[in-house]
Amino acid sequence: MMEGSYEKAYKEIVEILKYVPEESINKIPKEMRDMFEAKQLKTYNFQMDTEKSFEEQELLEETKAILANIFRDYWATDYQRARILEKENQDREELERQKREKYNPDNIFKNKNTNTNNDSISQDIQEQLNKDYNKNLPTEIQKQNIFQKLLKFIKKLLYH
Image (cartoon, rainbow, N blue to C red; front, side, top):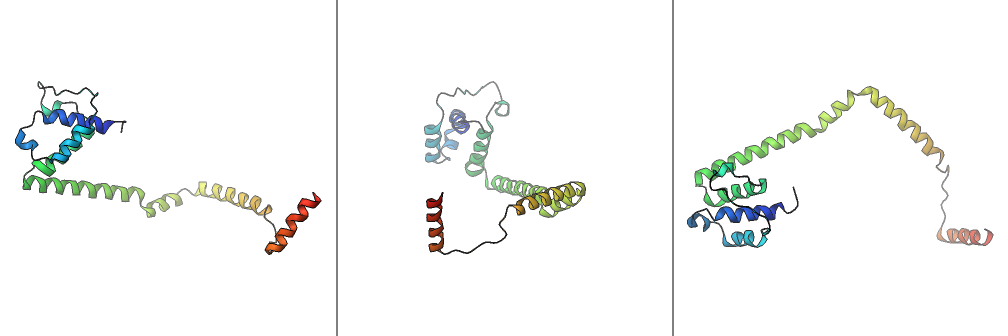
């Protein structure tokens, strides 16, 4: 999303509402209309082209989404609202199904097993890294109390 796109969308909404009957405008809560007015990008130049149909207007995607929500929530009949909500739920479910298919852990592991050649190379590299790492580890870790640590630190300061 480009910077300021909602502010531009609010400007487009304010301009579009100038062509909407007063009765329909009054169905939108005043707080929402005031917010569009207050947050619009006043320097953004948008004019409705009265020669074009509404569908032909070049509107931002955010503007279309806001108008769709306004229609659903304030202008639609009960029947239209129910159909819209049903369609939105179907779209959401389809999106979730696609995500489950794409990111299903079972499928991820299946794909990994089919790539055995790369797995053996990766395993060889991992084994080599483990060997190199283990060479640098101390063979025995001595437990020291705080006094022993302090004494060791003082000796290091004195003798070095």
